[in-house]
Length: 478
Image 1 (cartoon, rainbow, N blue to C red):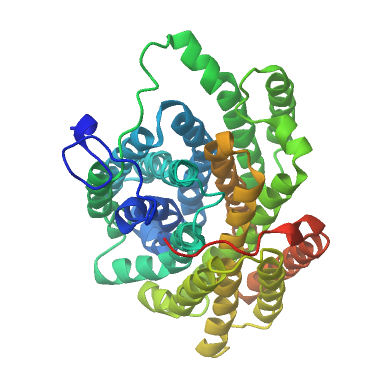
Image 2: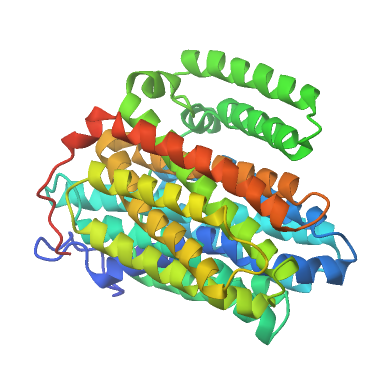
């Protein structure tokens, strides 16, 4: 079946990509859908946490592990999936990931306790991590095959919209699902979506060249750098334990994170094919700044998604359904902004605008109380939706320009990894702010942190002169 499937879904050998329309709907549709699975699962759980806590007989604070477990898994799995895509083929990795998502959705939908839900979220994190890095690699290879320096802006923009917009509409979707059904729907929704994505990819994405046959297990392991993957995972896990321990810091966990990270750096500097290319990060400062900027921006977005959503339900008194409706403008503005920016060549301008808007939203959030009108809450979330849409697509474009072509899969995965580090930190911030009680005081604490983050992102963006060097003439036709 696999050997006979082509981009156009026929039963003959794959044709070369059409020069007049190399990025047609059949090529991009499964990648957009697959890339959306991870961000929507990251955010759809937000409005289900209160219901899950009640059903499982635990506190809302304890359910934060459902957020952090997916983020930790994804932070490790995204660059790993990128490396596997480079070695074994992006289509194989994409399809395997979809199957794991399907399994995770079923496990979560049938779960009877919190540990089983954690297992489901880990599976979903593993599976959805394959979508974005494999899609970026497929796009890069298609652009190279037809002699294009970069793909149409609408293609990268579509991936950005799939990420930014679904992050923003996730709580809305989750609120509707929980309101119409119950919290299990937040997991079971993965089942039909995974089935559709699997068959779209099976029929419309061309088969990978056979790069597996004839290689020994030792050679494959050398190309993947499993020691680097394990070291990276160990450092990330210890860091997560430290972050979750705040405000009572677990210094042992932090020490372990530092020691493992130091060992990882030493190993990767000697590795022939490093999983985490330390030399590249040190020499390619434009790429490194893109990672940090993306992580900080998503930190702000996720603090609003999780913190404000919990506040709306527990302090403001909205149901999960109504809280989801309040967040609809956030998703709409995020998608609209990403769409507009994807058709521009400028990178620096939208990133500066995103930082300014995020800072304005953080200041506005400082004045919200449990007696504020709903329109004020909508205005704050809309500002963060606008910032998310502006920054996501431009950071992705900046990565595409800065990353080496042969490492775009791993580099794209690392972009998401830095985003998940920001997401983990966001979960920690909301957990600390609402540790004992979800109230206006905790929201003000969150807002002050967001003001600092927004100011930092604005400063590092304005001072980054290399952002002004983006090409201005990217084609927008697919």
